[in-house]
Image (cartoon, rainbow, N blue to C red; front, top):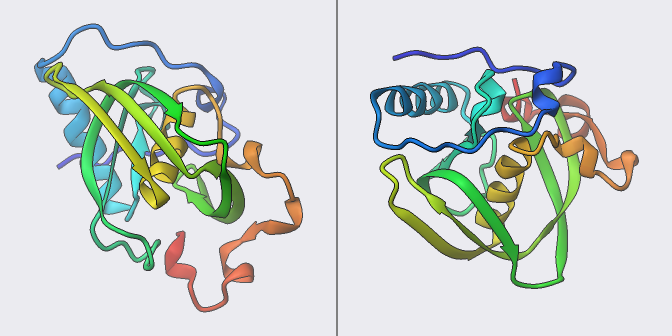
Length: 177
């Protein structure tokens, strides 16, 4: 079990566009995904992108059963998504609170598409093609933003709805450490 250090906002590596993955089903890719999984679990994350641990590749993982950081969230199946392409299925956007392992201790109200289709491949090169909505769609958009050098505060439209978790949600500090 390897828990990697998560880069924090301010690190220039988080602002770069990640490179496509061209080789699948390798020990290196399997090791990266296992490290990402261990890191996400240790930090109670809903998802993690390879750039967050300093790896310049288009790899994201996400999944939620029960998560103390998102106690009201619906279940999202654990997914390894490589070289993703997102297509909004509606123009409708919804604002909701987001946090990020790279922006610990803070939350912000972020607009996201309510429904989208995502395509890509898993670590073995198998095609993934899903249409999703709700929290699932939000998580995918958040994680894939990392592959384009975008952190959620860059999407906030009203900075009156951005701050420290302990101030915004007293007694719920477990949401972000």
